[in-house]
Length: 462
Image (tube, rainbow, N blue to C red):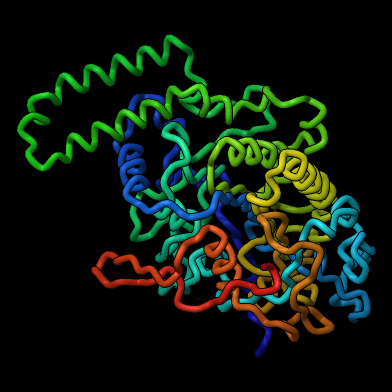
C-alpha cells in the first residue's frame, strides 16, 4: 500500500471555539432557563437499560493525530528520515521503552498498557475521528459530524444516570467528526467549555447564586402555570413524563452536588500543581472529579501549551504537518505537560481507589507518517496523516497493565504483530461497560444498525 498523499495545506481539526457550533448541549446556553433538549436527554437516558458494571472512561483526545513514532513506538534504528530526534528510555517494566520526553510515565509503566498495532481505513480528520469513535467508515469523505454514533453517545443511550442531578456524558467540546448521529441530540455530551486553568473558571448555570436558583425556580413555576390546560388534556401521559424530566433538569442546574463536581477550588492547591497549571492538566483533574461524582464518560481535547515559534497550530491541535508546525519543537513543549498531567491522574486515581473502575485513554484519530516531510518553505520537519498504524495509551479500568500489545515494522509503517482494527479498542471499552455490541439502533431511514459489526475485545487486557 502506497503512502497516503496529503494536500499541501491541511486545515486540521476544527478549533475549540468552532466546536461549540456543532449543536452539542452547552451548559452556558442553559442560563436563560430550562432546556427542552436537556429534558429530552434525561428522558432518553432513563429509557435505557442499566449496565452491569460501575465503570467510567476518561478519553483524552489528541485531535489531529499524535505521532506514534515520537511518543510510544519509537524506532531508534530506523533511517534518520524516519526516526526523529527523540530517543527511547527504559521504563520500570523491563522491555518497555517510551519517549525520553515522558520520564514520569516511564516510572509508571506497570500501571499502563500500550497498544501499538491499531489501524483503520480513514486518513482524513473527521472521517478518521468518526471511524475511531463509532466503528464505522462514513459515506461522506470528511463529514462535519459523524454519520454513526460515537461511543460516548452510545454509552449515554445505554446507561441510566448514577444520580438524578448528574449528566452521564461530559465533554469540553465536540469532536470534529464525532456526534450522536441518528441517536439524536439527546445524546450529545453535556458541554463544559470554559478553561479549568482560569482563576475565574465556572460552568454556565452551575455557578448560579442562590438568588439565581430561586429565579430559575420561579421561571419554571410560571411555565407550569401556562402549560396546565395543555397538560390536562394530554391523554397519552407524555406531558406527565416530560414533567419528570423537567424536574430533573432543574435539579441538575441548581444542584449543589453537580456544582461541587465542577468546582476545582475544592482541590488542594498542591494537587493542582502536580497536575500542572495548564488547561490540559486542570482538565484532567476536573475529569477525575466528574467520574468520582458519577459521570460515566468524560472526553477532553488534549490541550497543552505550545508557543507561536513552533508554527501556526493552537494548543488543542496535534496536526503537525510541516506546513502547520515544527513537529519536534511542538512535542518538546507539549510532552512534558502531558507527562506531568497524565502521571498525576494515574497516581490520583490509584490513591482514591478509582483505578479499577476508571479507564483513562490517550489517542487521536490516527498516527503520523513514519517518513518526515518538509513541505513548508521554511523546511521545518512535520509528519502527515497515517491511519495504517497508531498507538493507544490505556491506564486502569480493571484491565491488565504493564504490557505492550502488538508491534509495527522497523519504520513504524504497518502492524506486524497482533494487527488490531481500531474497533477492537471500542469493543474492549463496550465490554467493560457491559454493553452488547450486537444491539442495533435504527437510522433515519429505519434501517437497524448494530453498535459494531466487527472487532473483538483485546484479550490480553482481560
